[in-house]
Image 1 (tube, rainbow, N blue to C red):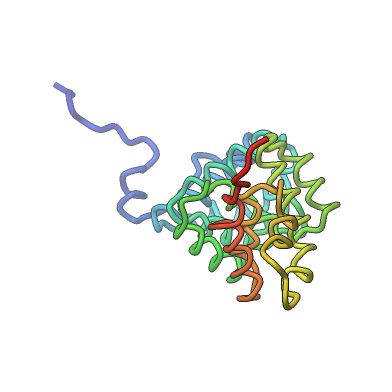
Image 2: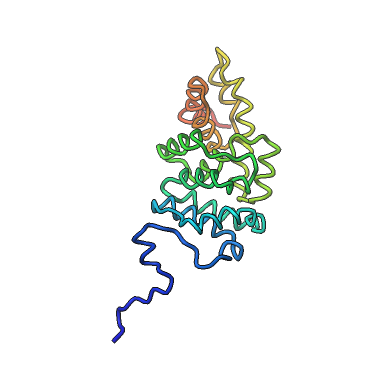
Length: 227
């Protein structure tokens, strides 16, 4: 006789109607601090608000993220990257002081939002580009700390390091009279995703045009004569 009847002990249906994210008990975030990342991700994905008491407890328990391993944080971050608009979750995480628990110098303001939107215009690996842009303004030493904490895998680690190296070549890249062969040798052996990251990130239209020349043409050039 009860078939099909919903038993809603925690008022979940009312929260869905009110578009609210709510934890079940006061120790939810201390029991598992990755729920902080999930609350932010679900709120920004669904356009929900974090319920007032839940938000207060979340802000109180942000330091608990430091009890979570880098591997688990990486998983939550990569879940954010799979969202349609990950910049929304990252911006909210920045606002709440959550993002800085990955690295204190990470920021997710207008600059990052604009670059993430541009990423979606390309066919490159979006997740790798998101990783690289998030860490773009870190110096080489900070990039190594970022990699050591998150352990994102060999391919992503290589891209992050190549971005740091490619950024240093931008002053050379904008020199007048640079030949195609010089541009080629400047980036030969560098990850294409790293070059694409710098192309998206740079404020110099001239540098971007030469980076895109390498991506679209120069790195495809092969000698006509074989060995």
